[in-house]
Image (cartoon, rainbow, N blue to C red):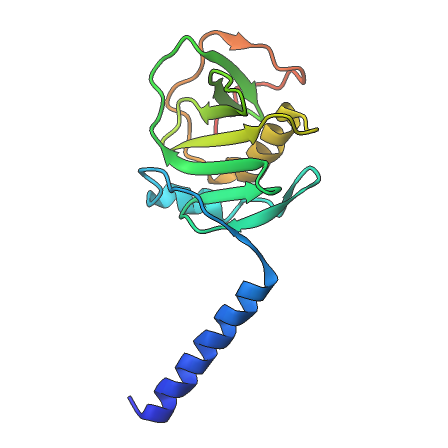
Length: 167
């Protein structure tokens, strides 16, 4: 390749990197074990620009999304949960296990879908956890794989959606 062409390409790459670095902050996240699953790419392209009043921030890990600073984090490709005694609820026609609350965050993971998706919501924020999950689910549901299992003992959803549309 001619030297002038290599220099032009390098200058272009540096210009793009500089422009991106000046525009936004990137949040460091660890990708899930199966983040490279092609189904996670289908989900990733559907992530919304905002969740409620929280704007999306960019992440440095494959198949992840973050909103706020980050107040909400999504990771695709986490290990699918086995049948569990955890609370299960249907939000946006998708079954979610509500994992034990931790002091500083609430975790949910899709149930009956591979790859599984995890949503982490930081506690102490003035946001409604159901609204956040509903917004994310509505945005990404079209990219999710069909359910292969469903919760047998659900916590009733406040909006009484039907859970028959699994996918």
